[in-house]
View (cartoon, rainbow, N blue to C red):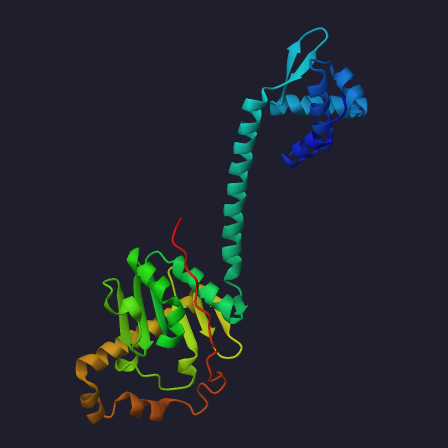
Length: 292
């Protein structure tokens, strides 16, 4: 019977060394057989073959079936290989978890950059889909439009979605019990060109995304805890400000010289926002599929 090269290659993929794979394959053609006979049939040096027989016995891949002389046969493949597959799957799962933990720690040291409208939309969508408890956003309705279905789906599954928004087109988020659209600065205004091209999102996955949808569109993803805290705090302060304006009234605040327009004119640097492109790029909608 000729050597089964495909079997040897398959065994190698399952973690058998080359001598082990060749010894096991040879034994399938001549079992039961002595270690000497297997060595001759496998074409291995006797020392290598004997070492492989010992290793295969430890693995449980073969077993001794007679004494004086000792002869060997392969273990029941219906029992051995499913067990081996489970061991490999468990090991792979453990290694995956360890790599993910190490990668998460490393991600805190750099900012991921995503380029292109489609890639940016997909990256934002992934963050929305991965949220489990809450999402905080600041953007205009035109930039949010490709993600409204995803945000509504997140709210449907119990995620609390809060948007500091400019504009009035918010789809189902406008009256969803798990969503709040807080008008920017109490009015929903978009007072500057940069405001109309920026999309900021913080989820509960330990990352923040600031997308500049100018030309070309780019998103910057940070996992550093300090940066995520700072960006979320800025959005929360926008919410606090809108609540204060709503409670006291813009006219009453203007009478005291603390209306937003006066504060902006007095406190905002002239160069603020000049480096952000003023024109939004057309961003593609995310195609969502019903769960299978």
